[in-house]
Image (cartoon, rainbow, N blue to C red; front, top):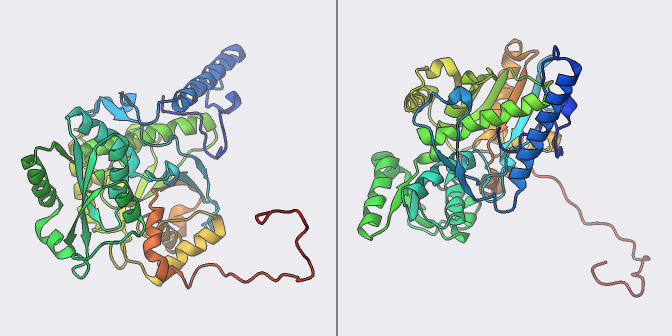
Length: 426
C-alpha cells in the first residue's frame, strides 16, 4: 500500500477516504461488500497514521516494489522518507479545452517547501543508496537555477551529508559571485559547496566527467563522495516515479470514479518520464504518457529513457511507452514573452503557479497542441503532473514585472481617527 493512500483525486482537503468511495466489485454480497469497504478504509487510516507518526519523516525504511514491478531488476531495498506524500490530485479548470476534455493535476509541487517537486521522489532512493554505501558527501550537477541541485543540497543536509554542486552558468558570469536568487539562496543557506563552470566548459567536458573530476579530488582529501547524475535520472532514480504510479493507482482506487486516459509531464532529464511511462504500462493505470521536452530533442530523450528502462531489464521499448514532443522554445531555462504571459494568465485564471522552465513549458505545449489538434484530446481525462520548480520564477522577476498584477495607494479618509487605546498594529 502506498504511503497515505487515503488521499483521493479531488479530495484536496480529505483526511481519510470514506468507505463508500472505494473501488470494489459491485457483484459482492452486501455483507462482504461492507467488510471489504471497511477493510479498505482501515488500510487508508493505517497508511495515514504511519505517514503522520512522529519520527517517520526523514527516516530510512525497507522498500518493497509494487507487485506489478517485482520483476524489474535491480530493485531498491531501502528508501528515505523525504517528501510529503501522497500529493493531491484535483480538477484543473483550464480555459479553452476541447469538447468533453477534463484536465486534472497532480501537485508534486507541494511535496515540500525546501525539498519540493519531482526530484524528491528520486532522491528518496538515491540518498538511501548513498548512506548504504557509506558516503559522507554527495556530488551532483545542474544549471545555475537547478531545482534538482537545490533539492539535493537540502536532502543531503537533512541526513547529515555534505553537498557539492557543479553549476553551469554563462561565460560572462562564471568568475563572479552567483548571488542569492531563487534556488541559489536555499543552496547557499544550507551550506552547499558550489563550483561554477561555463556552458562552454560543460559542453566540452560533460556532466559525468566533471563529477568524476570533483569526486577524484574529494577522494584524495579522504572524503567518501557519492555521485548523483543530472536530475537524479538513472535507473535507481527511476523508481521514484514507478512508486508515484503506485500512489496514483491507489488514489484512483479510493476515488472509484476517475480513470485517466493520458498523463502529461515536462521532461528535463528523463528519469521522471521513464518511471511514469514504465509504471503506467505495467500497472492497472494504462494511461498514455505524453512528455514535453524542455532542453534536448525527443530523439535524445527516447534513447536516454531506453537506457534507463534497459537498466531495469524491462524488455520494453521507450517509443511504445511515451510520446515525447519538443517544447524547449528558445532553449533550456529561456522563455519567450508569450510563454511567460501564459504562466501569468494560468495563475490568474486558476490559481496554479507554474514554473517557467519545466511545467510552464509543458502546459503551454499541451494547450497549444489541444488548440491545433482538438480531436486528439476530445473527451479524454488527462492527469498533468506539476513537477515544481517555483523558486525558478525569482530568476524571471525582471521579465515578469510588466505582466504582474497592478497595485495602488489606498485612499484613506482623514476624518477617521484611530480609537484611543488601540495598539499600533491593530
